[in-house]
Image (cartoon, rainbow, N blue to C red; front, side, top):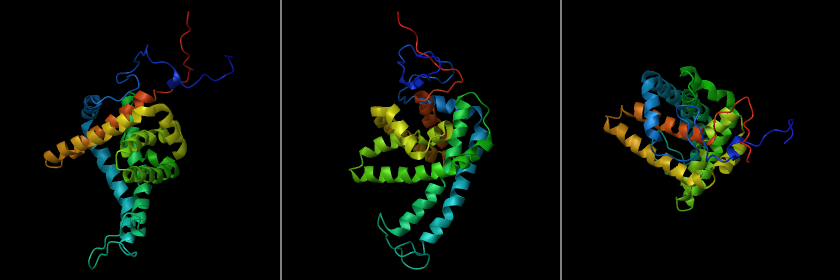
Length: 256
């Protein structure tokens, strides 16, 4: 390889001689015990995590709320006065609500970016919650693709939804951390995860249900703790599959 040529992506190199350089480094893979590491990170700055989770949720609700109000007045929507009407899965009212949730994606993405910074040993800052708005168009576009992929997967007897969720799980951070567009982020996720997307989707769904139920068991207030743990656990898997980029090219060891 010439000194002027860029080395191939680091993730393509064999990881059999993997050497961790950070506290939470692991070879690429899906680890259900990542929840324990996620809890360790959350409890280190529990107050900040609760504040970020609340702030992210409030901002997302404020963005999506007007679309819920508008959907109430379109044909087939949920009327404020009168009997509710079931609009069906593809009615215009549901489309309006979906647009609202997609536009709220930047509000939710920022908390994943904050988690990634903490995993990499950087200070946990509430201001990172708003970093998603610097990628507003890409994240909102990804929201539309995410809803489309999961909806199609659910129509195919539901099971393919695990694959779709697994593929989409790292995309928030591929957009924010690597600067990819929504389609490029999905392609990169497919390339790197491959068949492990099934297990990552299964992990994301099972962990979310378990942690949500645990939070509900703690009088629902516990969800202010358990749901951030889920966010950090999924962010850890992004960290496993996409190691921290360095300024120096990483070259595989010479054989012989």
